[in-house]
Length: 394
Ligand SMILES: *Cc1c(COP(=O)(O)O)cnc(C)c1O
Image 1 (cartoon, rainbow, N blue to C red):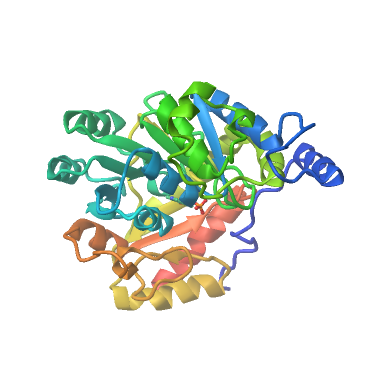
Image 2 (image 1 turned 90 degrees about the horizontal axis):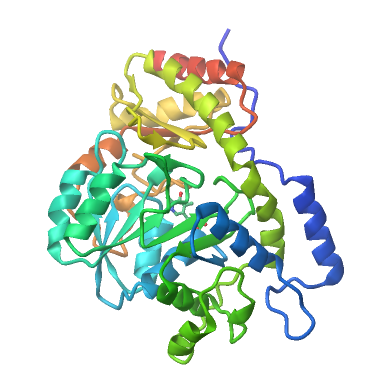
């Protein structure tokens, strides 16, 4: 009998009851906008900024409507102007080059290594090319050696912005991902580690960057109500020179996100347990390879990536379809046309995507990804790998 998986791999995490109750109270009051004019107390968004900054041990935090907006605002706040070059991982998600384009800058793609991290060798060489900023995407939660990355950035006077969309709660050598860069950005989109539907957080210890980011986010002149902001004098320097981009966070977003900060450790452990089972089983399948993870990397795997090295690109569609028919939705990064979340630099024709990143292209051609819902059981893991084996055998 053919194996089938009985589980929706796209299932998001539920919102904790306290978040639902808080959202209801906010709807009752009608105060859905983060800024109040007269009688408002602390907004839910300000409280989220405060809690998030505390969780990250960061001086400042600004809430935005997505991680893509946070990255755009981070680039602007870092002083990126039209025509600047920005280093970025070649293996990344569409909103990342999107944020660079939005800021009027040009991406310089840095190659990928065999473990799906940024290639330190390629970074070392491209860091000498004159770019002042590296927007580092910890794509799908794979964290490169941060000691080397920060050393390369320091040596070349490059400002590091971390894209932590998939590393909230993860750490490198005991230090939280997002605490290495000058600025870090996080996503609260449903498939990341805190599910608020949409949302983004930006953190920094630089008071000037934080004030600029808050002004760009669209604080009007009500920034005194922000929850983790620098002193008001800092805003005086910029308040007449920075446009309002209206990328604020909604009160309901903050209400559902806030109680999830305290659940990150528990969720991490659950994802990690499923990942270990899947990785061990997948490693035993002929023609499948799972990357080595550094022992310094405390990763939070809300998904698993592996390479199917035995298949030619032309054989992938049949493999993907066979898995799908058996209930296992595999995302493949090698498709000639952009599909769902897996568009790659091959598809981003609005920028110069004909750059030499050979390793990335050959990795993407064989790279597969499966989401790990929190409710996945050991039996589900076994079923998933059996479905894959079955599809490969055909
Ligand atoms: C999801 C994601 C983003 C963007 O997040 P949004 O909140 O959807 O804008 C950025 N980078 C990576 C690596 C992501 O996975």
